[in-house]
Image 1 (cartoon, helix red, strand yellow):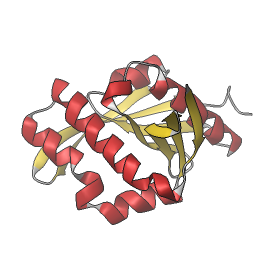
Image 2 (tube, rainbow, N blue to C red):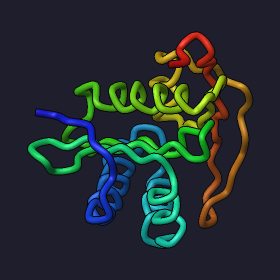
Image 3 (tube, rainbow, N blue to C red):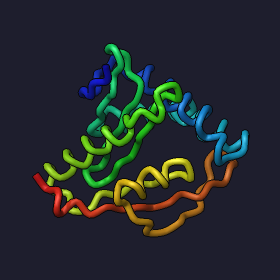
Length: 160
């Protein structure tokens, strides 16, 4: 059974692994091997940044039999910064459930418009959830070029 809960400090290494696994296993659908390796290395090459983002933001963990298998981070209050699902648990609706949770929290914080930076992989997920494309932005990470999709969704009708 899948349950959403708050992030705990003891989850950090699991979240690093979820991030790495999700990118390595699912990223190959849309990206070169070099791009995937560069993207997947973020929690390790920039461990302090990853840790700060997860700890400072509103991070929710999806656990399966108490083991973390997915997570999402809202940081700052109007930005869905991270959304990753372990490859073996992809396609189970976990990303959607985590998005619902993040959107509700953003609404509670008074956010009228939630933003995210989507990849080629996650863009369709966000579009299905009502996010709209604002702009495409070229970025470079560890010598690899990517296109990031800046997206947003109005939450004004969802405010709690």
